[in-house]
Length: 351
Ligand SMILES: NC(=O)c1ccc[n+]([C@@H]2O[C@H](COP(=O)([O-])OP(=O)(O)OC[C@H]3O[C@@H](n4cnc5c(N)ncnc54)[C@H](O)[C@@H]3O)[C@@H](O)[C@H]2O)c1
Image (cartoon, rainbow, N blue to C red; front, side, top):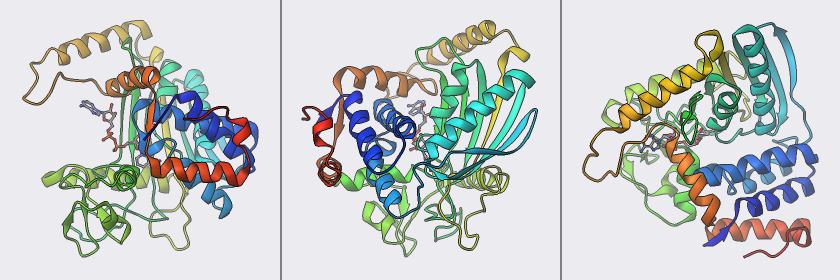
């Protein structure tokens, strides 16, 4: 394991993207997003993704200089086309459009299509909360390798299709609910595999449709189960609806559409809180609700009840101070890219 500060992760990612042909502005947006994901505790959507994005640039699946463009617009709605650039660049732009429209109209709805992997969906919900807006986001992940098995099936058909919701608060972190509709994000399985760990029970099926805890089985044709365990029909319904909102409404094509390339087609709804309640009063009520829920005796094996988004806020504080652990496998592969692109002299002393 190697321990790095967030700024170091950001710097390495920034120089690699720049060397791989991305403009400075795009390299910075993506590098900051990945480093912050590590800080929030989502290693599956952090530094490890440098490897994937550089590979996709080489394969022509990410066009690093592509800029997102509004292709149709009305006062409360917009459709954005990311032209297969970085997902983070298109999603940040689309969220900014949604916030701007919500501030003018009260509520807005923006779709974005043809974009690379946008990373941690909750990051865009957080952006909206910082502007005093609530937000609801649906992100489809199909069309490439759909990892999720529909409830009652034995083969993968759907993406891991995350949904995120954000609400401004006075708490240490904004209230953010952000998770895959499969039992875990695929990237988490990637991290288990990179660390040589077994998966918890009930996460995946093997290619033959049998329960497995070997992460390699997912990549040998297995599937991720929908969230909910024995009531997985609920996770499946959410995953299905996420494709309708994220993929069909954005005109990105649903999983299984012929010739569909991977794209994180998404829909963002932003709501200006002030149109419904004074922002300060709403935030104060959120805190009262947080206090009310947290004032619950913990169950065995738990320390305390957490609000949605609390874990990420706590991780940011702790990892901001102590650094982020990067496993050898990821580190060695990223260092091989540092050599390949000749950027070592730009990175200062590394651990
Ligand atoms: N871009 C993509 O294609 C894609 C696909 C799937 C997932 N993702 C991202 O992967 C990330 C991880 O997804 P995941 O499904 O593994 O999420 P997860 O299981 O880590 O759950 C995260 C959510 O649960 C909350 N949470 C965690 N522990 C809690 C607790 N003890 N009490 C209360 N709340 C708690 C967190 O605050 C957060 O809102 C997300 O950011 C998601 O957006 C992205």
